[in-house]
Image (cartoon, rainbow, N blue to C red; front, top):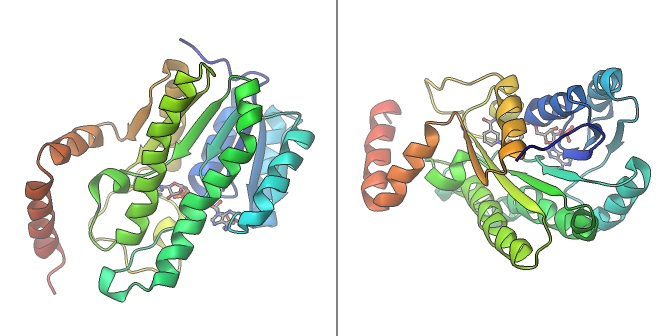
Length: 264
Ligand SMILES: NC(=O)c1ccc[n+]([C@@H]2O[C@H](COP(=O)([O-])OP(=O)(O)OC[C@H]3O[C@@H](n4cnc5c(N)ncnc54)[C@H](OP(=O)(O)O)[C@@H]3O)[C@@H](O)[C@H]2O)c1
């Protein structure tokens, strides 16, 4: 199977910086017409200038994706102004590094709103369009969805929800013979602003972050192959398998590792 991106209409959320910007550029460089959105207009303008060098019909919209009631009208606007959507990349997201004892229901729920309810609203609003075009849905989840790292209960749960949703959605869409493929992407640690945003605990020590460009070719290959779940870097898939084989033992190792690396 191959997936020819030339002329495809691709919407990437959260593409003002970071992984979303890198993916948007990668798609435009391969001939896709790319729509990008996020809140910061100045950052979007920088990315759009790059997109237009490769794909002049690319577009951008400044939008707060946490405004859930605005998402259906936004989806309609994108379909209208981009001329359709073949690929939806649900990438926008926020971190939440905070120990569970310090979490409040409001923080948990607002993290869920942007990382889970928002991509789901957008997906549902665009689903008729994606079915009509036998499209693709790429959900940027996280290795946190599979491993539940320390200090990230609120964040991990949002990503686990997105992954579980993706699994069931793929089954439903296949049983209904829609031809729509769903893809889950689990980045490990990628060098973006995610680790320096305010209102979060410090990231774990001694983490080695990969450059954002590392994400692009694996996701393009994933569209080509139809692979459901991608890990970047790939070895994290093995770690997730080991965890699934004995979750209790994995939690004990996580506790021991955390004690050794973050002495109180
Ligand atoms: N970096 C990693 O190591 C890593 C690992 C696993 C998973 N991920 C996931 O990868 C995705 C991208 O993260 P990143 O690392 O590239 O982080 P980032 O550099 O902080 O980028 C996040 C993007 O989401 C947008 N965004 C956040 N809140 C938004 C809102 N309310 N409305 C509209 N846009 C919003 C931001 O744009 P504005 O601020 O301009 O709105 C930005 O473009 C996220 O879903 C993240 O959870 C990242």
